[in-house]
Image 1 (cartoon, rainbow, N blue to C red):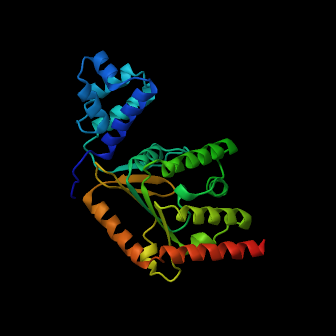
Image 2: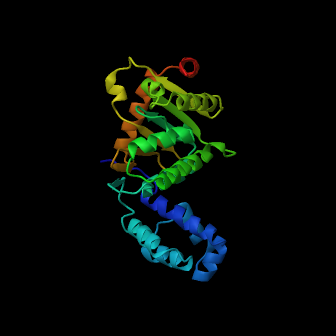
Image 3: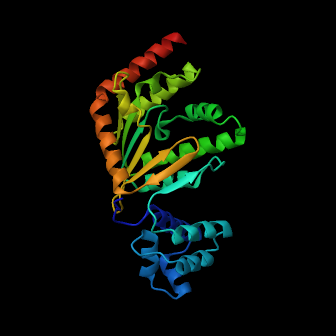
Length: 287
């Protein structure tokens, strides 16, 4: 299997955490370096992924920053397996998985995000009401507190689109997703209006995959591809019980091919906006 150049997703996660904990403690790279007897450039390269990570070095930084023991163990395990490519997580029975947290981080670092969804609206353009309805149906064992916490996470995740230099967001959504009201037409009207507003922003493209598209294309499942300026492209895939970051060339090439086919089959942006607007009028008239 081909391997991609650049730092693995595991090491990228550790580098991001080192920077996060340093900032949380209100310290500069120079202050951390002075305390550990290192050069400032060494700390900076560890945080940017320009330098290989070693267990002893990472342990020293996390100890100085007083990171909790559980966090330290998590990150040191990632350093030990840092040369391995692709990162899977299976069966974690918690609302917010490690990989979801890292997806949010990588979205904030990306210059472009390509997202196809065949069953649900993408999280980056969901309203709070839509997200809440979805979670109540998909996770009936969650408490209201867990649901509201996840809704807040999803809404905060969308702040990446309001940055001064937001990523280019390219969305393709299967047509049935727009017609599925989840037994709440009023909620869906608000969601579709929000989607229309998002599609008018210069850095967001929304396109609809028609009903009559070849089934094999839509059956590929959801896809998120993250283009990053200084690191290899990542694919993120998620199902009910598993999630994974894929970074080998084989997976990235396959993802690009699927996206190319989806793009060729999807309606234009103008035709997609018209369809969404028509659905809003239809739902309103039925209320």
